[in-house]
Image (cartoon, rainbow over all chains, first blue to last red):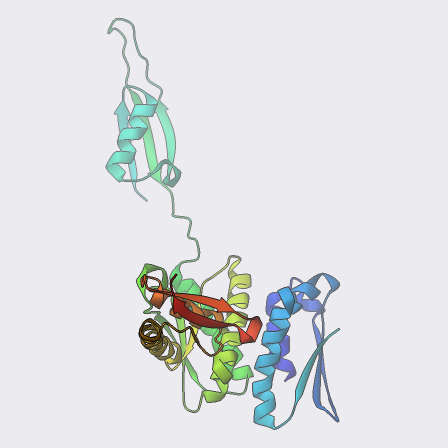
Length: 75
Length: 220
């Protein structure tokens, strides 16, 4: 899960070195947390959340394959 | 590198002549003035200007090929990170009109890719959006790029065109407005384009986001 988010985030931000992605499994499936430099936050969220929404859609494919829910949180 | 030495009445004129011969523009060459030339007086002491014009190495903006390589790599990486084994191939989109055709297309090929297309093509749309974003960021300029899966879009667009024409006939026959099911932006565009030349009906989008749909009605 985490690798996909990491690849996308690092490719679209200005400070790829500051991209940190963690993954934890909880009651509601897998939670992927994405952390970027403050200046890059807008880039991973996108206008009207479009980028974040697209990442969530792609994560759903991985979730469906693994039979679990995946939630993406941008912190 | 092509060079040409040429003379003329003035430097200006010599350069002009050279460019004409080489079929280049001023931005594509470097001009060295070898002899400035003198207009002379009453035809005495006239000296022609001589210049050397050298063709510069073309500044390559990322050509289609380079964009293609990056696009293939990015889409391939995304697909494999999504846990799906498939091949990616470059192609040119065959859409209607000049604007559509010739654009870069990456087609994903493999078995059982329904999951990657998603409901109403939503996953495919997200994949294309992210791929465009990454490719544009890498190349430093916005790139147009279409991502397709086993020709899904081509087929979908064709059936949407047929649907649009069928519905338009129905609207003309009954005079009643027909609302189509919600569609993403690119699919709505296909419908609008298909009906653009029809003077008897008009198509209009309403609704927000995922629920945006087209209604076809008689043109008043």
